[in-house]
Amino acid sequence: MRAMLGVFTVLASAAVLTGCSGVVMLNPAHTPETVFEDAGLAGTWKLDSDDIYVVLAREADAWRVEVYGEKDDGKATEERYLFSGHLFRLDKQVYLDAVMTGSHAGTLKDVAMDTDGLVLATHYVARVERDGDTLVLYTLDGAWVAEQAAAGKVPLTVVPVPEKDKWWLVTDGTDKVQDFLRSVAETPEAWGPAKLVRQAPPKE
Image 1 (cartoon, rainbow, N blue to C red):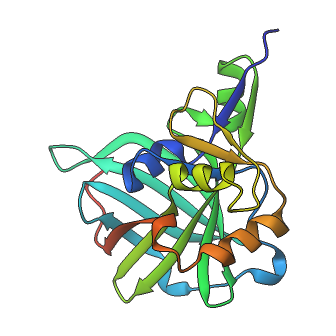
Image 2: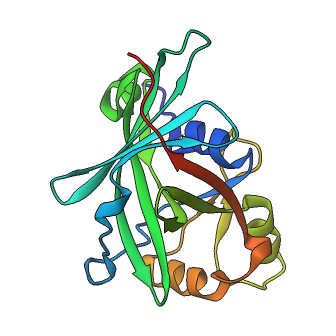
């Protein structure tokens, strides 16, 4: 059997939300001690610059995240991406650590069978700021992180994601990832914002 390594991540939806460059983590960015809750996040949110919806709901001990679009006729698209995530706090900042669990194409297991190989569920981290019915997700700029790592300015091991131009994989453990997030929390160059507003979902 020919083995393939598919980095199945928040890539498809994150590219729509925040641009074409990004970072995914091999290991979780949160620990049980850092988990944080904000019941006000629950609901349907819409990207203010595009017809992209993000639905956040509590499910067991995690957040269920669903991302989909809206067609010209006002109905929801069949193309959907599902994630399981945890909110966590480092110092004064709140983050979302999300892992893709499936899509309109099936579960991760289904995708692995279709590609005749291994699917790696990586972690995508966004800094979260909510003010009432406005939500801003700040995601790491992949090119900036890779450049800083190559220059030895951030203590991370960063490798390109195969077949995904402008995306990078951080292979360090949780402790190093958290130290990095703390160090760049207030560095504007490290982040790209995506603003969402609370809104009723489109018709099915």
